[in-house]
Length: 493
Image (cartoon, rainbow, N blue to C red; front, side):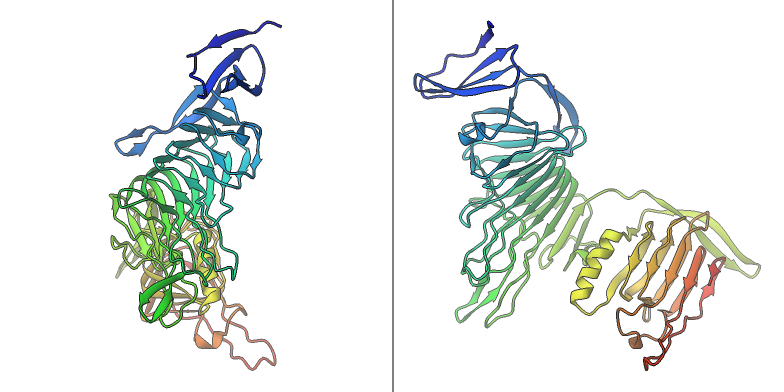
């Protein structure tokens, strides 16, 4: 069968050339001719992808199509990738380290999952990754060596979509090795998709002090730009940090080496945890030890749990920083007015609240199980819009307001102890939210007098179920009762 050949420029010997063959299906083998590496491929059907051009600092997701691409296969990856666009049409697992011979774009097909175990060495070339309409293509990139980052480029790395996980080399326990940085680049651009970047952990016996989620060569590199999507980036755990001539302190690493600019999307930066100390105590790392520029909300704290509690522009000394995230829609609730003639309610709205989600509860309980078996909320208004279940006692470090979403049933099995602070509960118009407070056997209830306690407790609506602790027979434990409440229009059991 005769092929209709389309030729581009005639290449100089030793350089890569491409010959497109129309009318055939799939990729043809790589050919060597006259000392040239000649990639021959068939003209393929157009494929879609989501581009993310930046407009005024915000990535605008824009559907595009192309038929100028090569289907990425294991065979092709055995040689350096020539400049061009590559399409991962089905999941592949690559064990070797991928090298580039030009600027490369990778499009991930929705629903596929691929792994680059040895990472990507881009040299002085750029790497750009795209997703498709559903952004469900997954790419996992790792490193097999303590001396190699998972992704290296002396210029730019850009992620416009997909589910991307990049992890540095994790040192083997007691090996004395360092962990590797996850990404090494002048600039890392996050414009779309869901991205997780984690530095490799450092063995505490290593003399290495750092492993970053993103690093670079010098003060003008290792910079992070977030203009869309969601990025979680974490510094390496463990390692020594020399603090004095006579000793070391164990210190985790920061998430980002260079400056950080967030104009849209969401950034969660987590500093690495300290490992082993000698003469000095261990220290957890700052999440962002670099310059942060953003007009978005900044939530910072010593942990993921703390980050929901307090807003701060101070990055120094903070282990966990969240920047941006989804804007909160205003929520409605019924505000009470108490007068001599009774209680009346008016509908109010607020966007000054924090959603109390099961995801947050899971993080809090993980910390509680490793600590004092309690969870603490700082002062503020919390929207209970899910059927969350909290197993440990909930403590307040300030006055707290709950807004119960209609139909939601949050349950606090460890009760609430607000101490000398005030606790107020509001309902929404339907009044169908239900707050359940009781004790379980997960902890010693003898440290609390009641299932719920506060300086003042006001219930302004909804359905409230409070169950005192019932001491088992022959347990030598005392039962604990519920507490007196100020009730305005609620159903309390």
